[in-house]
Structure formats: C-alpha cells, structure tokens
Length: 162
Image (cartoon, rainbow, N blue to C red; front, side, top):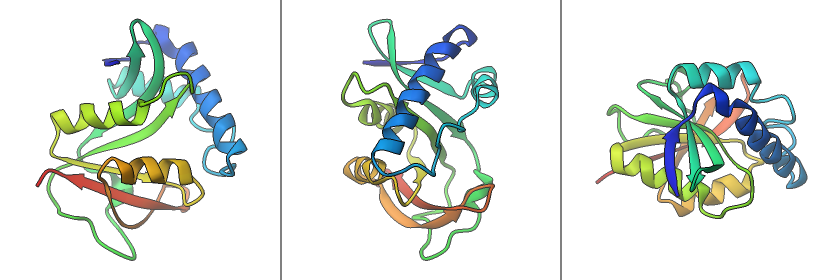
C-alpha cells in the first residue's frame, strides 16, 4: 500500500469511504461520534484544497483516508485527567477511515507518519473501541481527555520517538 495526497476528483470515492466507515461505527456500537453527519463534503473539500487529505491506496485504488495536520491543534491545548508526553511540535491524525476491503489501513497511515514525524497525536470517542485498540496496538499512549469544538470529550493519545 502507498499513500498519496487526495485531489478534488477523488471526492466521491473519499465520501464513499467515509459512508462505509460511518455505517461500521454505527453497527459496532459507536453511533454518536460521526453518525451520518460527519465529516461533511465541504470539510473534505477544504482538507483537499489545503493538502491535508491523504489516501491510502493499493495500486491505484483508494481504500483509506485520513487528514494530517502539522502544528498546534487548538482542542489539544487543554487536557484533563493526564498530560501530554511532551510539549514538542507534533502532527495530528484526524478523520481516518477505511472502506473495509483491505486490512492494515490504520497501521499504514501511522507508519507513514512515524517515518516523517517524531511526535504524533490522535484522539477518539470513548465508544470507538475498535479505534482505541488500533491506536494502542500501534504504540500510542493514552494521555488524558480533550474536548472537541462542540464540547464533547475525546480520549487523547500521543506517540513520540524516544
């Protein structure tokens, strides 16, 4: 598998991947994190236009998507019930999703990030047990609780190169 930046012509495929991920989350006991309302097409268009959206492909076919943000994440400024591993510069993985047809999507994204960055943060909903297991299996440490823009809590994780 390889990773490439998304282009606007990938938008329909990306939204199909998110729809599959939304359905999976709802079916696996996590109906509240995204439902069928997040992420919006407008948000993904913005991610693409700002070079944040990455596709995980097998050959030419995208099977996964994620947004990668460099720099400070405003919702990470305040953390409760713990602390970040360090205050160094970091990147944040957001909106990672798979079409369910290929295994190893999360690991592929994390491997790409670890090759290029020494400090990575990610968060997920308390009901997203599948994602929590993936995050922890890939070497991230739980650091505490952050609150996203709408005020809802998320479990916050960090990986840092030692």
